[in-house]
Length: 301
Image 1 (cartoon, rainbow, N blue to C red):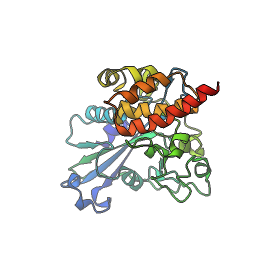
Image 2 (image 1 turned 180 degrees about the vertical axis):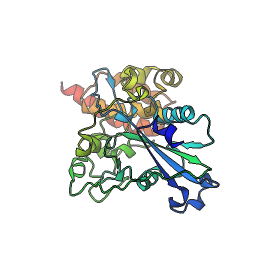
Image 3 (image 1 turned 90 degrees about the horizontal axis):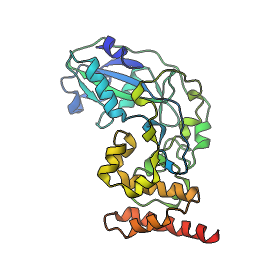
């Protein structure tokens, strides 16, 4: 299994299940003997917004990593019995990775690998047969560096990672924004600032799995957010992970970008969504606030 996975993924570690904290309490780990941890890197490329289209976090530029990792494992381990887990499960993927020594938990609450920085996805493969452990010694750390702490626009790293302040966490919630989030949000989903400033991410050069390369649909047309039905929007953009919280959330976040860019050309379309009974109250609360400010900008022109 290790050989097959190593031919597919950028790095692979293996730990005995007993190394996972309180492993016996997890239903997924019953009868499991070994945990494989795989890493798949994605490009260190940042796409700026265009006049007619916006982007989400860098990890969404390629196709949805949940599906990509599962498909790769299915091909690599077609002759083996296993369970693959990616993101949506109760196990701590980062703890598993840390136990292999292949990455450490950084001050920005992301895992850092010596070759790929923080630009990689994690998957777990559970085996009912005992596999040889693959663990390396890792003495890497952030040291005294605090570049990400100082760069965070909402001070979510000042006293350790505070998820209740994190911009990425906030713009994925289906609830009205506070004033700071309206002012600071700059992507359709997520936030990349602490990764982009990190010195550990400055020297990455490699070929990436084609499905994770940036696709044309990494750019989401503003008109599509307003005009396409949920079904048609999904048919066009549904292969990307940024859609996991739905089109309406992307639209709400897009309104904050329009405000940052002082773009009032969509004011009439915003009014239509506010009048539309199909839009939820959390969206309308933010849309009304942002529309008022965009109208003020327009009237000052």
